[in-house]
Amino acid sequence: MEKTLKKEKFNSLITGLKDQGYKTIAPKKDSNLVMLDEVQSADEIHLDHVQTNNSIKEFFLPKTEKILSYRIEKNKVSMEEPEGFAVKTVVFGSRPCDAASLPIMDKVFNWDCTDKFWVQRREATTIVTIACDKCDNYCFCTSVGLAPDSKEGSDVLLTKVSDDEYLVETVTEKGEKLVESLGTVFTPADNPGTETLNRQVATVENKFEIEKVKPWLDENFVHKVWAEFSTKCIGCGACTFVCPTCHCFDIVDECTMSKGDRVKNWDGCQFKMFTLHTSGHNPRSTQDQRWRQRIMHKFKYYVEKFDSILCVGCGRCSRVCPADMNISEMLEIIATEESQPVNKE
Amino acid sequence: MIEALRKKAEELLRSKTVDVIYGYGEGSTPERTRPVFITKPEDVNKLTWNKYCVYNLTTYLKRQEARKLGKPAIVVKGCDAKTIIVLIKESQIKREDVYILGVTCNGVGEPQATKCKACDIHTPRIYDELIGEKIENKEISFEERYAEIEEYEKLSEKDKWEFWQKQFAKCIKCYACSSICPLCFCDRCIVDKNQPQWIDPSAHPRGNLSWNVTRAYHLAGRCINCEECQRVCPADIPLNLLNKKLAKETEKNFKYRAGYNIDDELAMATYKEDDNQDFIK
Image 1 (cartoon, chains in turn brown, blue):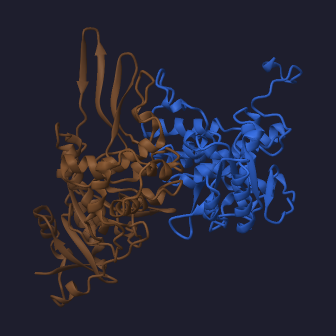
Image 2: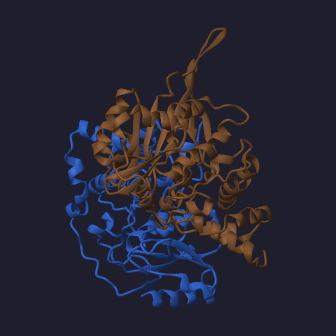
Image 3: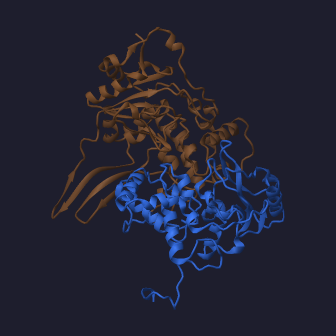
């Protein structure tokens, strides 16, 4: 039977989750930003935005986390692994693009070695997505095979059907269990059938033909467009850190002579230090090579290795870029080049 | 004004006075511009000028990718021009290395950037060519120029500590603040040095505090208040508050404003035999 969630029930939803021992993450206003963050009550939830400033990734791959502690004694080294990092959590109100990033990232975190931090958090978390009822110029989910109401990665999908009501669609067993466990928070639709018709979903313009991108990348590792497009890049890590699918990290020891913590931190391919060798040689010595790497990794290497595009079209990288580097514009150039090849230099 | 800018840019490129123009072009949305690098006279129509030209383009003087294009003419507002003075004084560039295309400015940003609210340099104090009607640079009192930090200064030490702890907790260590800063020009930043590890690279409270405070300290007496660090911060940390406070202390104690007069001696890098403080001798 079709179910809906009324806004007036948000309070019982949050209380219900709390009673069941869930930590709830939801969009929250923080001065000029809207951030996915832990909420204690429904009043804190903010839904009048296109996109949260932070992505969903930090709840699975935090910006910094201790992966082990060690102590060096006379003839032995003792190690202690962190526990309790996977907390039973519901992410409520994240966008379909964010949810879609999770199964894409599962592939790399379950690849040659299983990243227990990612995997256990994934198991402990239920994703309740709200379909987008609005978008902006930076959104391009439809160009990468997704949609403002995609179900990929969500356990439950909510779609606005009126100002104070959402249609509830359970996507996975996990989602079904959650909806069931909350009982009367969800109500049977007043007029079954009509809600499906009144779904308020944004229209996201299709900006480029994704099928044209990889063939061009296959042929154009060397091309003048890389440098032309990226002279303005200042080499910071803002794009990679706000990206829900960028997952590079660095491991550092924060230590004294006798003890220390091994820490995993976000890292990004746009930093010149990222590829600097101890010899002093840097295989990606200029910014155009680093920019090319970002595009190649997302639209060629990851596709070849994992059969997925490493981009969900959320547009965050372009929104935050200090120099207005716009990734969908780069992909439009690539798709156009592939359609009408011009002389290469 | 746009026409005058394009005409001058074209002339500079045609006469080979410069190889490239660092200017503003149309951005992703009408409310945004972006840096453009014009090397061909026929491309000067890509240059624009409007209230969204917030960037301080002098930051590209430190980028090898831009420097590779040859001698630049840079479109600078009054505030941005101060950077060039500091860069000359700190021996990073020579005056003849850049052609300064000064633009007169009545403020940028929508809503208007904080830096514009007490601006006394609508017309750059250094330029090779001035584009736009000259606007008289009226004197603005010391108090008025630092009015934006008054509220902050009133906080108790404890409240200030709490305020910054909360702000720095948001830091994601993307280094957009230092990457955009035209005066953060070290080839290898202290945060990238790990023998010893002066600053923890982790985005935890200790790492974030040491990074953000060190960044601000390295700009003490140098920051020209272009506010670019604050504009680009994806975590919305009011970084310029720190810069502004340090600038105020510098001006109060040394009667020095970074980049204001090309003849002024640097507050932090001037040695004098007859210094009246003993510790420096």
